[in-house]
Amino acid sequence: MPDPQEHFLDGPSLPTGVTRFWLVRHAIVEKTARQTMYGTLDVPLCPRHLSNQQPAYKALARRLPRQALWFSSPLQRARKTGLTIQKAGNFSAPMEIDPAFIEQSIGEWNGTPHDTFPALLKKPAPPFWSIAADERPPGGESMMDVRQRIGQALDSYAQQNTGQDMIVLSHGGAIRMALSHCLDIPVDTALRLCIQNLSLSIIEHIAGYWRVVAINELPDFQEFAE
Image (cartoon, rainbow, N blue to C red; front, side, top):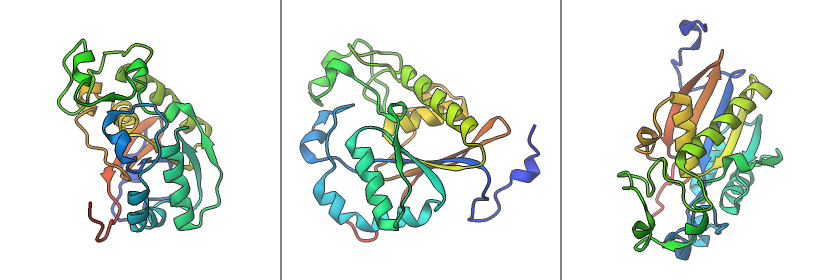
């Protein structure tokens, strides 16, 4: 059992030597893709946002630890976000691609326009997500499946890389399920969390226990406007 006194966080800096994950959601995707349920389609980032939000990438680069392992979902929107952060901060670490950090697969429903998507559902969608936690689209996975996938990956990396920082470029649904796993809360509850583009969530693994340090922490966008 860890000593609670030993792990108080009383200042802005996080101590080194803790098994810590820095979960970053990818940036905004291009306009046409945003009109659909793009799920695991490999859609690109929006060039205009990529250009205008450079201050946010620089802020993220300053926030993230210099000595860390980097991981990414295989989708280009996550990889490109990570590479842009690395360029902004002059990071040189290699980025390992791991499908465990991909977004929820909605299988045959990928690419469905938002206005026709509800007609495909067999169960009512929750308030802040498009699919019920236990609904599995044809050829896809439920959010419960995603939680299991993400949880297994986090547990494995925490054991393999004890005491290290790990930066993970991922997706809104996947990060919600990472938090569901770490907080041991129901999937439906975790789907109420807001995970915005380019937000940072921080979790720690200490003596066999998970702790959440930050959720949906946004970088400084300065004067960027839509």
